[in-house]
Amino acid sequence: QVQLVESGGGVVQPGRSLRLSCAASGFSVSNYAMHWVRQSPGKGLEWVAVIPYDETYKNYADSVKGRFTISRDSSKNTMYLQMNSLKREDSAVYYCTREGADTGSYIDHWGQGTLVTVSS
Amino acid sequence: DIQMTQSPSTLSPSVGDRVTITCRASQSLNSWLAWYQQKPGKAPNLLIYKASRLESGVPSRFSGSGFGTEFTLTISSLQPDDVATYYCQQYNHYPLTFGGGTKVEIK
Image (cartoon, rainbow over all chains, first blue to last red):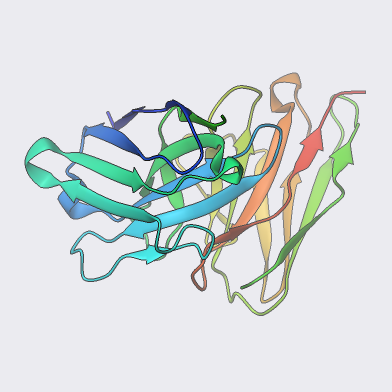
C-alpha cells in the first residue's frame, strides 16, 4: 500500500538550512505529482511546493519562494525539500503528500509529518 | 491568491445529528474542491474531491456538494469517530489554498 515517510526535521537556528526527505513506497514518485504541505502548531494547513510527475515545472508558495527547493530522486523513490535561510515562521509540521490520480491537485495520501522548529 | 472561508469555525452537535460545513471561495473554482478530515495528532485524510466525489473507503454518511464559489460538506448522522477538524482546499489555481478549518466536537 502507499506509504510516505518523512525525515530530517529538528531544531535549527534562524538563517540556517535543513533538508527534509520523503521516502515513498507502494508507488513510483515518477508517476505522480508530489507536494509539501505544512502546519504550524495549532494552526491550519499551508501548501508549500509541488513537483509534477514529469518535472516540467516546480511551483512554490510566495512565503518560501527563493529559499526552498523541491526535488526528487526517482532511483531512490524519494522526494526532498531543501530549506535555506530559515525563519521562525517556518516552524511547522511538514507533510509529504501525493496528488490524487483523478484530474487536479487534490491530495490523496499524506505522510505522518516531520516537525521543524526554527529557534535560537 | 484564492481565499477560502469556512463556517462555522466550531460545531458542537450531538451523536446522530446532521452536520453541515460551508466553504466559500473568493473566485470560481468550478468543481475543483476537496475536503479533508484531521484528527488530533494525525495527518489529514481525504474525504471528498471534485466537490462531490467520495474517496474510496470513506463512509457514505459523508457527502459534498456545490459548484463555483460555494460548497458544502455534510455528515448525515454524526458518529463519535467523526470528532475532528475539517478543511476544504481549492485546486483550481496555484497556490493551493485551504480553509481555516471547522472543529467538530460532540455535545
